[in-house]
Length: 117
Length: 113
Image 1: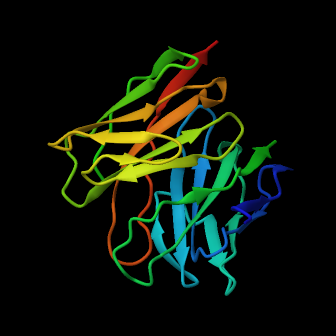
Image 2: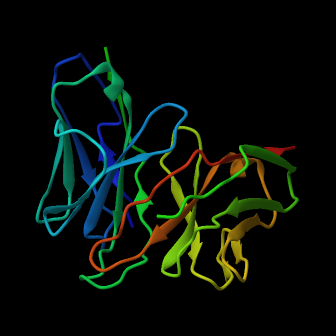
């Protein structure tokens, strides 16, 4: 049973460029959340997708956008890259519970390491 | 979500139990306690979660005090592979998709030979 998979594992971009990161959730999961982890810090929530819609968003600018596909996989897009966007980007999947009260844990992939030059 | 407080670091000897404390004095009745750990260069790994009863699985035990203001994660027989940053997170579970996880700095556990 494959867990959460993310691609690519590493990426180098320059300031001003755009980047797309990809995530395939764990089998049976329908909800995808994205987190940014700067060096030495805990992960920070970016946004969450469920039923192909953004359901929650953290304190990140509009340069960060996403998408969820019918097969539950997801993309994170970042435009106009800044040096401060250098970080480990983590995807987490979970079961949304069909709109019910849910305490299901989120399961993480190993992330994409993005470096901005 | 309620805030959690963890000491920055601790160590324990291999083969001994590791008891990792967490304070969450402002926890609400509908908030769960979750523990994750992150080994260098990997994504966070889910360990265990609970509401008010003690919980045990193949990885660890979670002890939550009766007033729910603190909890302890217990690794019964620590190994060198348990060296990691451990995060204690309090999260409300509400209708719809899972709510976000709010990570603090965590506690760095070092297991010594």
